[in-house]
Length: 296
Image 1: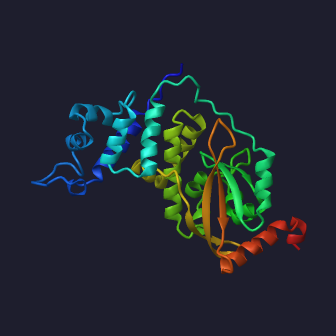
Image 2 (image 1 turned 90 degrees about the vertical axis):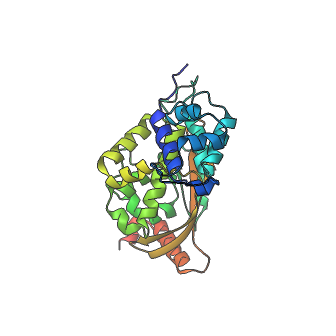
Image 3 (image 1 turned 90 degrees about the horizontal axis):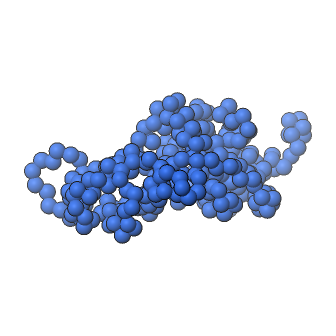
Protein backbone atom coordinates (compact mmCIF):
# COMPACT_ATOMS: atom_id res chain seq x y z
CA UNK A 1 0.00 0.00 0.00
CA UNK A 2 1.32 3.40 -0.96
CA UNK A 3 2.09 5.92 1.78
CA UNK A 4 -0.25 8.92 1.85
CA UNK A 5 0.90 12.18 0.33
CA UNK A 6 2.45 14.67 2.75
CA UNK A 7 0.29 17.61 1.74
CA UNK A 8 0.06 19.18 5.18
CA UNK A 9 1.54 22.48 4.03
CA UNK A 10 -1.11 22.81 1.32
CA UNK A 11 -3.89 22.04 3.80
CA UNK A 12 -2.49 24.51 6.34
CA UNK A 13 -2.10 27.34 3.85
CA UNK A 14 -5.48 26.76 2.24
CA UNK A 15 -7.50 26.67 5.46
CA UNK A 16 -5.60 29.57 7.03
CA UNK A 17 -6.14 31.79 3.99
CA UNK A 18 -9.81 30.94 3.77
CA UNK A 19 -10.24 31.66 7.48
CA UNK A 20 -8.42 34.99 7.14
CA UNK A 21 -10.71 36.26 4.41
CA UNK A 22 -13.87 36.00 6.56
CA UNK A 23 -14.98 38.63 9.04
CA UNK A 24 -17.08 38.00 12.17
CA UNK A 25 -19.91 39.99 10.59
CA UNK A 26 -19.98 37.63 7.60
CA UNK A 27 -20.65 34.62 9.83
CA UNK A 28 -23.00 36.35 12.28
CA UNK A 29 -20.58 36.80 15.18
CA UNK A 30 -20.45 39.95 17.30
CA UNK A 31 -17.32 42.10 17.12
CA UNK A 32 -15.72 43.79 20.07
CA UNK A 33 -12.32 45.33 20.60
CA UNK A 34 -9.28 45.08 18.39
CA UNK A 35 -8.45 41.77 16.73
CA UNK A 36 -4.83 40.69 16.48
CA UNK A 37 -5.37 38.49 13.42
CA UNK A 38 -7.25 39.13 10.17
CA UNK A 39 -10.45 37.23 9.67
CA UNK A 40 -11.80 34.63 12.05
CA UNK A 41 -9.96 33.05 14.95
CA UNK A 42 -9.44 29.31 15.00
CA UNK A 43 -11.70 28.94 18.02
CA UNK A 44 -14.47 30.79 16.19
CA UNK A 45 -14.25 28.43 13.22
CA UNK A 46 -14.28 25.48 15.61
CA UNK A 47 -17.45 26.68 17.38
CA UNK A 48 -19.25 27.36 14.11
CA UNK A 49 -18.23 23.96 12.70
CA UNK A 50 -19.23 22.13 15.88
CA UNK A 51 -15.80 20.76 16.78
CA UNK A 52 -13.29 21.46 19.52
CA UNK A 53 -10.67 24.17 19.14
CA UNK A 54 -7.94 21.57 19.65
CA UNK A 55 -9.37 19.41 16.90
CA UNK A 56 -9.69 22.27 14.41
CA UNK A 57 -6.19 23.51 15.24
CA UNK A 58 -4.85 20.06 14.47
CA UNK A 59 -6.80 20.01 11.19
CA UNK A 60 -5.44 23.41 10.15
CA UNK A 61 -1.93 22.13 10.82
CA UNK A 62 -2.52 19.61 8.06
CA UNK A 63 -3.62 16.50 9.94
CA UNK A 64 -6.59 15.69 7.72
CA UNK A 65 -6.23 11.91 7.36
CA UNK A 66 -9.22 10.08 8.77
CA UNK A 67 -11.47 13.14 9.01
CA UNK A 68 -15.07 12.28 8.17
CA UNK A 69 -16.97 13.80 5.27
CA UNK A 70 -19.52 15.29 7.70
CA UNK A 71 -16.79 17.20 9.50
CA UNK A 72 -15.23 18.37 6.24
CA UNK A 73 -18.68 19.53 5.13
CA UNK A 74 -19.09 21.49 8.35
CA UNK A 75 -15.70 23.17 7.92
CA UNK A 76 -16.46 23.95 4.28
CA UNK A 77 -19.77 25.57 5.22
CA UNK A 78 -18.19 27.57 8.01
CA UNK A 79 -15.43 28.89 5.78
CA UNK A 80 -18.02 29.58 3.05
CA UNK A 81 -16.09 27.62 0.45
CA UNK A 82 -17.48 27.65 -3.07
CA UNK A 83 -18.00 24.41 -4.98
CA UNK A 84 -14.48 24.36 -6.42
CA UNK A 85 -12.87 25.09 -3.05
CA UNK A 86 -14.96 22.41 -1.37
CA UNK A 87 -13.91 19.88 -4.01
CA UNK A 88 -10.29 20.89 -3.47
CA UNK A 89 -10.57 20.37 0.30
CA UNK A 90 -12.00 16.88 -0.23
CA UNK A 91 -9.25 16.13 -2.77
CA UNK A 92 -6.64 17.12 -0.19
CA UNK A 93 -8.26 14.78 2.32
CA UNK A 94 -8.39 11.94 -0.20
CA UNK A 95 -4.73 12.41 -1.13
CA UNK A 96 -3.77 12.16 2.54
CA UNK A 97 -5.21 8.64 2.80
CA UNK A 98 -3.16 5.51 2.09
CA UNK A 99 -3.84 4.33 -1.44
CA UNK A 100 -3.42 0.85 -2.92
CA UNK A 101 -2.68 2.34 -6.34
CA UNK A 102 0.56 4.13 -7.12
CA UNK A 103 -0.09 7.73 -8.09
CA UNK A 104 3.47 8.85 -8.68
CA UNK A 105 3.94 7.61 -12.21
CA UNK A 106 1.15 8.53 -14.62
CA UNK A 107 1.76 7.41 -18.16
CA UNK A 108 0.32 9.85 -20.66
CA UNK A 109 -2.76 8.54 -22.42
CA UNK A 110 -2.94 8.27 -26.19
CA UNK A 111 -5.70 10.24 -27.88
CA UNK A 112 -8.29 7.79 -29.27
CA UNK A 113 -9.08 8.28 -32.97
CA UNK A 114 -12.73 8.99 -32.12
CA UNK A 115 -11.67 12.06 -30.14
CA UNK A 116 -9.64 13.42 -33.04
CA UNK A 117 -12.57 12.77 -35.38
CA UNK A 118 -14.78 14.78 -33.02
CA UNK A 119 -12.35 17.68 -33.01
CA UNK A 120 -11.95 17.69 -36.77
CA UNK A 121 -15.72 17.72 -37.28
CA UNK A 122 -15.92 21.16 -35.66
CA UNK A 123 -15.10 23.47 -38.54
CA UNK A 124 -16.20 26.83 -37.11
CA UNK A 125 -15.26 26.18 -33.49
CA UNK A 126 -11.73 26.02 -32.12
CA UNK A 127 -11.52 22.82 -30.09
CA UNK A 128 -8.69 21.16 -28.22
CA UNK A 129 -8.02 18.64 -25.46
CA UNK A 130 -5.81 19.32 -22.45
CA UNK A 131 -4.71 17.20 -19.52
CA UNK A 132 -4.67 18.43 -15.93
CA UNK A 133 -1.21 19.95 -16.37
CA UNK A 134 -2.64 22.07 -19.22
CA UNK A 135 -0.65 20.30 -21.93
CA UNK A 136 -2.45 20.45 -25.28
CA UNK A 137 -2.72 16.79 -26.31
CA UNK A 138 -5.09 17.10 -29.30
CA UNK A 139 -6.50 19.91 -31.41
CA UNK A 140 -8.39 20.75 -34.57
CA UNK A 141 -6.94 22.99 -37.31
CA UNK A 142 -8.92 26.06 -36.22
CA UNK A 143 -7.60 25.81 -32.67
CA UNK A 144 -4.04 25.66 -33.98
CA UNK A 145 -4.73 28.78 -36.04
CA UNK A 146 -6.44 30.61 -33.17
CA UNK A 147 -3.69 29.78 -30.71
CA UNK A 148 -0.83 30.19 -33.18
CA UNK A 149 1.19 32.25 -30.64
CA UNK A 150 0.98 29.30 -28.24
CA UNK A 151 1.97 26.68 -30.80
CA UNK A 152 4.80 28.87 -32.12
CA UNK A 153 6.05 29.76 -28.64
CA UNK A 154 9.61 28.92 -27.57
CA UNK A 155 8.03 27.42 -24.44
CA UNK A 156 6.81 24.39 -26.40
CA UNK A 157 8.58 21.39 -24.92
CA UNK A 158 10.90 18.94 -26.69
CA UNK A 159 7.95 16.62 -27.38
CA UNK A 160 6.28 19.42 -29.31
CA UNK A 161 3.43 19.63 -26.81
CA UNK A 162 2.30 23.19 -26.00
CA UNK A 163 1.44 24.01 -22.40
CA UNK A 164 -0.83 26.90 -21.49
CA UNK A 165 0.83 27.54 -18.12
CA UNK A 166 4.30 27.84 -19.63
CA UNK A 167 2.94 30.11 -22.36
CA UNK A 168 1.12 32.53 -20.05
CA UNK A 169 3.91 32.77 -17.48
CA UNK A 170 7.12 32.27 -19.46
CA UNK A 171 6.45 33.88 -22.87
CA UNK A 172 6.18 37.67 -23.01
CA UNK A 173 4.22 37.34 -26.26
CA UNK A 174 1.28 36.05 -24.23
CA UNK A 175 0.75 39.56 -22.84
CA UNK A 176 0.08 40.82 -26.35
CA UNK A 177 -2.13 37.86 -27.27
CA UNK A 178 -4.50 37.98 -24.28
CA UNK A 179 -6.61 41.12 -23.90
CA UNK A 180 -6.84 40.34 -20.16
CA UNK A 181 -3.59 38.61 -19.33
CA UNK A 182 -4.08 38.92 -15.57
CA UNK A 183 -7.33 36.98 -15.71
CA UNK A 184 -5.84 34.26 -17.92
CA UNK A 185 -2.83 33.91 -15.62
CA UNK A 186 -4.95 33.80 -12.46
CA UNK A 187 -7.27 31.12 -13.88
CA UNK A 188 -4.29 29.08 -15.05
CA UNK A 189 -2.61 29.08 -11.63
CA UNK A 190 -5.92 28.18 -9.97
CA UNK A 191 -6.44 25.26 -12.36
CA UNK A 192 -2.96 23.92 -11.58
CA UNK A 193 -3.62 24.32 -7.84
CA UNK A 194 -6.77 22.20 -8.17
CA UNK A 195 -4.86 19.57 -10.15
CA UNK A 196 -2.16 19.48 -7.46
CA UNK A 197 -4.87 18.77 -4.91
CA UNK A 198 -6.06 15.78 -6.94
CA UNK A 199 -2.61 14.41 -7.83
CA UNK A 200 -0.03 15.73 -5.34
CA UNK A 201 2.45 12.98 -6.26
CA UNK A 202 2.40 13.59 -10.01
CA UNK A 203 6.07 14.11 -10.76
CA UNK A 204 5.54 15.96 -14.03
CA UNK A 205 3.09 18.32 -12.34
CA UNK A 206 5.52 18.99 -9.50
CA UNK A 207 8.28 19.70 -12.01
CA UNK A 208 6.05 22.14 -13.90
CA UNK A 209 5.05 23.98 -10.73
CA UNK A 210 8.67 24.10 -9.61
CA UNK A 211 9.78 25.50 -12.96
CA UNK A 212 7.11 28.19 -12.96
CA UNK A 213 7.75 29.10 -9.32
CA UNK A 214 11.47 29.48 -9.98
CA UNK A 215 11.23 31.58 -13.13
CA UNK A 216 8.00 33.58 -12.83
CA UNK A 217 7.27 36.03 -9.99
CA UNK A 218 3.75 36.39 -11.40
CA UNK A 219 3.17 32.68 -10.94
CA UNK A 220 4.68 32.64 -7.43
CA UNK A 221 2.29 35.39 -6.32
CA UNK A 222 -0.75 33.61 -7.68
CA UNK A 223 0.34 30.22 -6.40
CA UNK A 224 0.75 31.60 -2.89
CA UNK A 225 -2.83 32.91 -2.90
CA UNK A 226 -4.03 29.28 -2.96
CA UNK A 227 -6.97 30.02 -5.25
CA UNK A 228 -8.52 27.00 -6.97
CA UNK A 229 -10.57 26.65 -10.13
CA UNK A 230 -12.20 23.49 -11.43
CA UNK A 231 -15.32 24.46 -13.35
CA UNK A 232 -14.85 27.43 -15.59
CA UNK A 233 -16.14 28.93 -18.78
CA UNK A 234 -17.11 32.33 -20.10
CA UNK A 235 -15.74 34.92 -22.47
CA UNK A 236 -12.15 35.63 -23.47
CA UNK A 237 -10.73 38.33 -25.71
CA UNK A 238 -7.62 37.96 -27.83
CA UNK A 239 -5.45 40.20 -30.01
CA UNK A 240 -4.74 37.73 -32.81
CA UNK A 241 -1.77 38.61 -35.06
CA UNK A 242 -3.76 37.73 -38.22
CA UNK A 243 -7.45 38.02 -37.31
CA UNK A 244 -7.27 41.07 -35.06
CA UNK A 245 -9.43 41.47 -31.96
CA UNK A 246 -11.61 38.47 -31.13
CA UNK A 247 -14.23 38.03 -28.43
CA UNK A 248 -15.01 34.35 -27.97
CA UNK A 249 -17.11 32.28 -25.62
CA UNK A 250 -15.48 29.12 -24.30
CA UNK A 251 -16.70 26.06 -22.45
CA UNK A 252 -14.62 23.15 -21.11
CA UNK A 253 -16.18 19.71 -20.83
CA UNK A 254 -14.85 16.73 -18.92
CA UNK A 255 -13.61 14.11 -21.37
CA UNK A 256 -13.41 10.54 -19.97
CA UNK A 257 -10.53 9.55 -22.20
CA UNK A 258 -8.38 7.66 -19.71
CA UNK A 259 -8.62 6.25 -16.20
CA UNK A 260 -5.05 7.36 -15.54
CA UNK A 261 -5.55 11.12 -15.77
CA UNK A 262 -8.25 13.71 -16.33
CA UNK A 263 -8.76 15.41 -19.68
CA UNK A 264 -10.87 18.35 -20.73
CA UNK A 265 -12.34 19.25 -24.12
CA UNK A 266 -12.52 23.03 -24.57
CA UNK A 267 -14.50 24.69 -27.33
CA UNK A 268 -14.20 28.34 -28.42
CA UNK A 269 -16.99 29.87 -30.49
CA UNK A 270 -18.11 33.35 -31.54
CA UNK A 271 -21.51 35.02 -31.49
CA UNK A 272 -23.23 34.40 -34.84
CA UNK A 273 -23.01 37.38 -37.15
CA UNK A 274 -20.40 39.15 -35.04
CA UNK A 275 -17.03 40.51 -36.24
CA UNK A 276 -15.41 37.79 -34.14
CA UNK A 277 -17.24 35.13 -36.14
CA UNK A 278 -15.84 36.75 -39.28
CA UNK A 279 -12.40 36.49 -37.69
CA UNK A 280 -12.90 32.79 -36.94
CA UNK A 281 -14.05 32.20 -40.52
CA UNK A 282 -10.88 33.90 -41.74
CA UNK A 283 -8.75 31.67 -39.52
CA UNK A 284 -10.70 28.58 -40.58
CA UNK A 285 -10.08 29.43 -44.24
CA UNK A 286 -6.43 30.09 -43.49
CA UNK A 287 -6.11 26.79 -41.59
CA UNK A 288 -7.69 24.85 -44.47
CA UNK A 289 -5.31 26.32 -47.05
CA UNK A 290 -2.09 24.35 -47.74
CA UNK A 291 0.92 26.25 -46.45
CA UNK A 292 2.65 26.73 -49.87
CA UNK A 293 -0.49 28.41 -51.26
CA UNK A 294 -0.92 30.45 -48.07
CA UNK A 295 2.53 31.95 -48.43
CA UNK A 296 2.14 33.05 -52.06
